[in-house]
Length: 110
Image 1 (cartoon, rainbow, N blue to C red):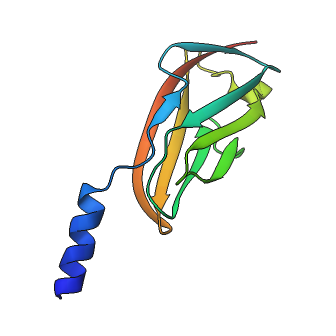
Image 2 (image 1 turned 90 degrees about the horizontal axis):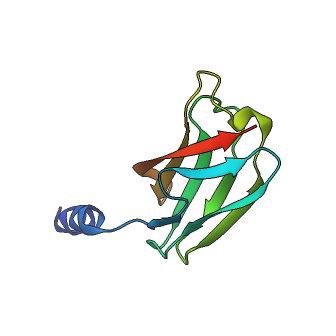
């Protein structure tokens, strides 16, 4: 029981990798090479990224405990069909367990 409480305490105080780029309001163009950049995070931390209006395409995923970038070409489906900014969703997992979710408003130009 004590080990469980210590583990839980560690998870509660742990900080996941901070998303350093993009920031809200960043403008990307379809077909442009871009990157999503993170500061170092927790051991065994991973991320999955996609646009909220089309979750069928994961635009980046992998370990982020050491920080780093995920590079990709902005796909045509990144344009929000409802107009306005697209919402980039970043799912953080630590030891394969959901830990937190970041969302960033990105303006995608066709």
